Length: 163
Image 1 (cartoon, one colour):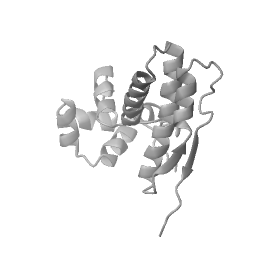
Image 2 (cartoon, one colour; image 1 turned 30 degrees about the horizontal axis):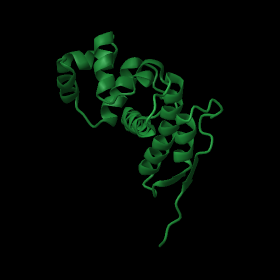
Image 3 (cartoon, rainbow, N blue to C red; image 1 turned 180 degrees about the horizontal axis):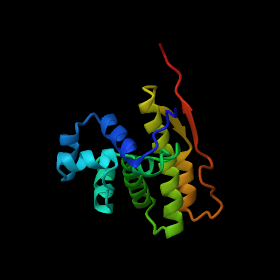
Image 4 (cartoon, rainbow, N blue to C red; image 1 turned 180 degrees about the vertical axis):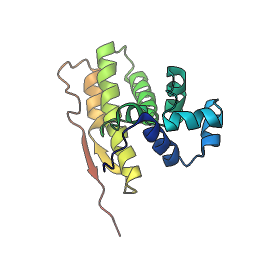
């Protein structure tokens, strides 16, 4: 007997339970009745794209529900991307010149990498990682260097405990 969840309904139920919600609570949050949610989970009915978009906004891993595969490990959360976007915007303003789209993209990706590292450390309840070299990379990007590789010059390491 396989322990792998085979159906979309079973995986949908697993995600609902992971979020700690009853069928009624989950259905209400998504605008469907409990009996509709129950039919989705039993496999009697297939969820439509509007429903899938709604569950994605509620924190459900839709890729997992549809395929049985979790989001990639290196995926960053939307919150981390928002933080990085804000940091990239502020850095671009501080540079005092107009960045090209390519320069801004490199800046954003570099900041996403550091934000994701901090996010992972928080998930692990460890100390916030020490991030070095970001300012130099930002300056090189702002100066128009086309030779800045993504992640180059940025070092992320765990801070040593002082206790």
